Length: 208
Image (cartoon, rainbow, N blue to C red):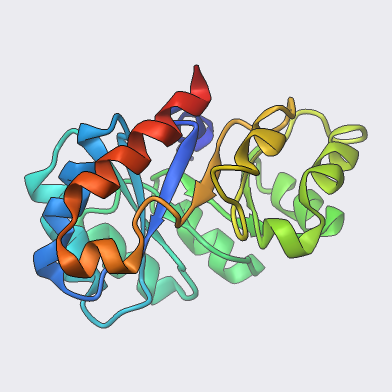
């Protein structure tokens, strides 16, 4: 079973990226890399997402590219076939978790309750996505989980911004956060790669 803990240490922020046009995939990845971000969670929320994922995997080797919004075993298989180097799910079921673990790449299953954390722990995983972070309770909730379950490390995602990210990153059980603010839709659609690079620089600085 591949350990996902290392994925949490690549960057203080994992960009959560949705790309509608595959022609934008490589420029977005390169813009993030130019700003010091070496990891992307590319969501499978568009019909062309797997094409974008494959392009990034093939053409931007200095980016660790993972597939997010994994909802089914079939999506997990397709993502790995396209070159995904890790998998992220918004939530998890026993069947989905078991299948993702069988693929032998790092997995960040989504959890939102203590019971879900404990269920994932039973599979041997100690790195998880906390989603949706803001609505589910924010930093105070994660701090409370850390008292009885201190060995689990989280990547909270959902409703986090550059301004609120430090509140999460200050917690001992948070190694990084996920955020969509690094790749604004308007910047992607207009090809404003410099804006994305600058947002990536700001995010990278959170780890200093």
